[in-house]
Image 1 (spheres, rainbow, N blue to C red):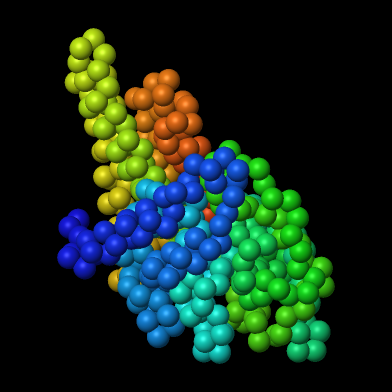
Image 2 (cartoon, rainbow, N blue to C red):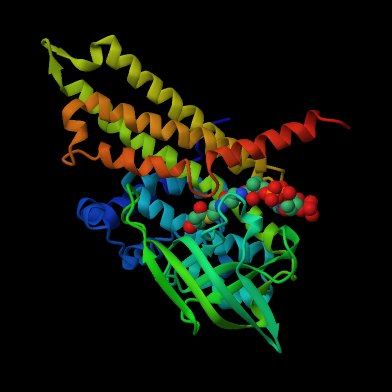
Length: 381
Ligand code: CAA
């Protein structure tokens, strides 16, 4: 199944080149100072990398999720932070493409797809993370406007985004009371609280978003009232493939550094890769990356074919992110004391990998999605 076409290989090479040229110089300093540079995301957009999956009609490349995964893997090999940025600015595009009206698509999609504007996805709240359906932000219809109130937590691009997809409650408790809205970044009443100080992914801003009587036109509702939970869940199905693809890139970068170090580093007059303890560790790392990549491409392929893929996306997210933290940790081990210093990138890979097991649904939530699928398949009929 797994052979890239010529076009896919060219895209992969172009993405690798663009990511290295655009992001390469700032990596170490921005990781240390926790700096996000929106202009770098704009440049990735100019290179065509922010709207791979959005149709050409709306400014994207009009390719599939498989190609999107290929691009994200290459960006993440250079910087997981900007891999996540591209994926998160992709989420409103995925949502608009699936649920947007023609007018909403025309207004917002092209600029997002071309990286001229930045998108964000606001679901989580201080007291609602894994239990997303318990969110408490509200949206009340007042004439031809909705008035939004509440606090969103862990928002990638908070304070930088030009467009937020916000989930808020228009009805009673539970998933059916949730609606999804397009909220412009400059809306009155929108403010930004604490920027999180994180272990990893430090060039990616994670910020509290506060809504106080934010008024938006009623035409900014996505779908109908009560559709918001489904909008969020189907976006996350797609998003989980992107986090898995980023994790494959991150792990591949860690293996590349570790394997080349192990070939050059001599101890006891022998390259350390020739000691079985190290060579087999590298072999296991390579296996984890290969099977993770296969699962990512399977999930992306199913999505591209219009087939059900939620449970495979959850598997890809679990497997690729669990693999990434193991591979990155082992890469630090292969480099020994050097690996633990900031002189080499593997300690950054290890810090960046940890959060992949948490974002866009913890791996425990992914296992819940998979086990519910098994229950549906094999349970009482
Ligand atoms: N696609 C479409 N609809 C779906 C769906 C999916 N993947 N999953 C569930 N639904 C629908 C169900 O069919 C159901 O509708 P009906 O009653 O009409 O059938 C409704 O949604 C409720 O479903 P559940 O009963 O399964 O809902 P639940 O409350 O048990 O929650 C859950 C399930 C899987 C735990 C879900 O809450 C979840 O995924 N939680 C994790 C949230 C998450 O990933 N947050 C990350 C936020 S983004 C981020 O990390 C940062 C960033 O910046 C991007």
